[in-house]
Length: 88
Image 1 (cartoon, rainbow, N blue to C red):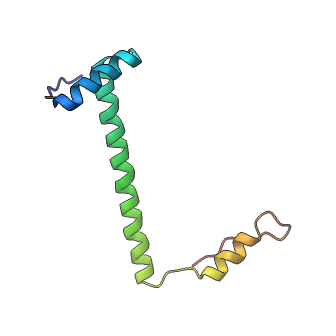
Image 2: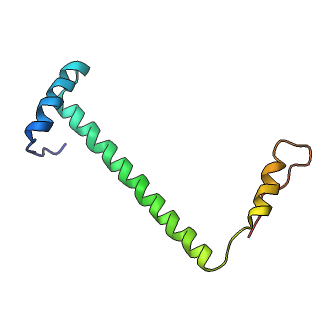
Image 3: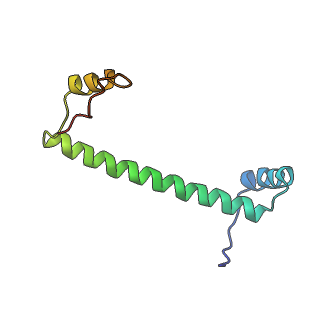
């Protein structure tokens, strides 16, 4: 395991210490957890951004499904005559 030194700002250090005591967890654990959650959050944001760019490119190339087709499909959900999802 790598060791990294960080400088905590006073407005972060005191609440971190209080949270550490409250949760009965080490400051190290809490810092690692916060970094892990930040990295996971960024990965999700990056994935969403990539998907958005792909969707925008699809619209630009007129690869879209008309709203009426989607609504007809959704209205059929759960019925005996449920339709297949519309395709481009």
